[in-house]
Image (cartoon, rainbow, N blue to C red):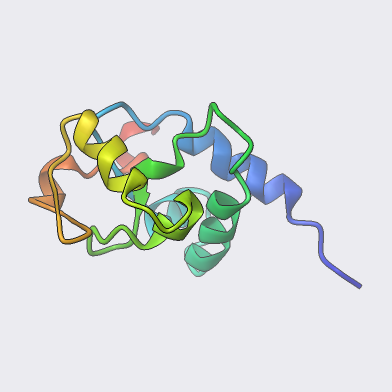
Length: 111
């Protein structure tokens, strides 16, 4: 029997919708905020499942090192990097430059 993750995914989307333009967070930071610290991969699945949700800025969610690991969500193109750069977040070789400067931590920002 397949588990229904839609409730968790919707919580992920609610957090993601609050990430300000020009900032990024990580899969793990969202998972920790939701009380599911070991569910970073599940957050990634939620981001991948957000393709048809225009109000979910999935391009603002990266891995814990600032790598744009979700680029496959954007057709494997440079769209994710282009969207971030358009918001003022510098990207070099699929990694956010000065990641900590742009990092948005939901534990601090949404408390």
